[in-house]
Image (tube, rainbow, N blue to C red; front, top):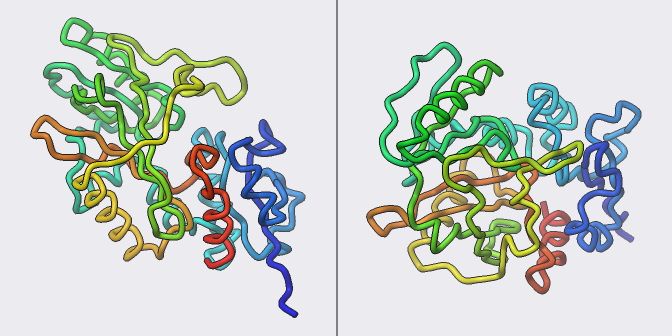
Length: 288
């Protein structure tokens, strides 16, 4: 008789019981929740350690990546080298895929020239923290945010605001075990001429990220499917097939899809939005 696979879902101390969207998948796997930075955990006791709600890692990314490598590529999902690649949004410049045009402003770099409506965000961040949208009249505020990100030791990303987001939102394609599981339509979260206001609490994402109507199950256009599969293929060739991965795309000014980002560390997968998605994740974990 085969020994059951023992699984841990890695979370953070602020969410000791994990995130509710993951609970069914955890139950199907018999997974145990453990905080990634709990030094008392024997990670070698688990066959699979699945990164899920580790939503405090961005403030200690070096420690987190070090922990990932200590757990090891045989055990950790997704694998440590993919985590290290995906943790810094400068990966956008390393993919052979159409992406939202991005200027990277490292600490000490001169401030870039700003044109039109722009989005400013950190290269290492989550939950739309320290992220703002600014029209031409608010370029001074945009520069201030760039400088704040630089002072924090991070790289700032400056991108044009993609106008289609106002009426179409973002398309999020969720892949489990390398196969498309479900597609989501994500509402706009950035208001013009402000840094996204944060929610209260220890994790403090942007308030808009907690809206109950933030996402809805939807479909994607053929070109969006092709782009998402192209990104998944590139990532899989470099790092092995991810157990889970969310690919966020927008429609650019030329009416073609552009990669906004992909998330393969601890994305909200919205499993409860799609029938069978929790089972598909559980199956992908077992098969990995």
